Image 1 (cartoon, rainbow, N blue to C red):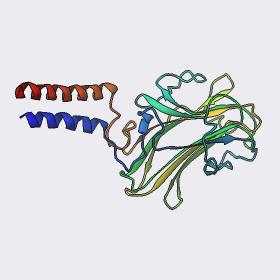
Image 2 (image 1 turned 90 degrees about the vertical axis):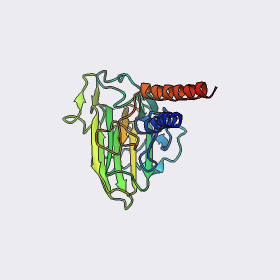
Image 3 (image 1 turned 45 degrees about the horizontal axis):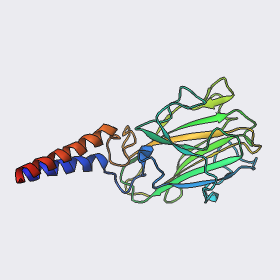
Image 4 (image 1 turned 45 degrees about the vertical axis):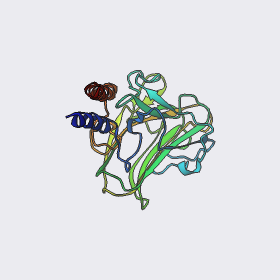
Length: 255
């Protein structure tokens, strides 16, 4: 009986805190860090980026993060779009780039092998400052590719292409709101996600994007590959209390 009680308590912690190795890590960024992700940063003086197809700015060319201007965000509301929650699921998301218009480019990428699921699920929300034309405005691009380089998802917008698609905020900015994405994929495949957000090339207009909610099942709410919902913070505490109670009972009976 003592062994079974302890085993149940340990199992409950394993279920709450576990994550599949072959999934996009840090789903929901609940660990409050960038574990599993590669960051890149730089400056944008290139006015040849377009709002359709692949970005002329190549995410792979940003290999250092010395000028990183993103952040792990906590629950709250965006400072530009006061109706936009900064977190889609759980307690944290990542914001790529920021609202300062200073030529910055920021990139976040991750690759996984032997993916443990049949769908890739995530959410994004973009906030772009109204600026110039499609060739020289603030931009973002989010792409998912497989191991053969096939593009499974490609969202590319500039502030010039946002009108009619994004919500205008009456303060010179556009907001997409949260977009929930589900991609059906082959289990066991290799996949890469890359997100780039850049200010306009004249240092006058900014753009940034939130990314959150990675999971292997649709509606998982950032399950981090575990196939279930993101645990509430209280779930871990309850599991810990269960373990302490089991250990306490074991000590009393052995005394």
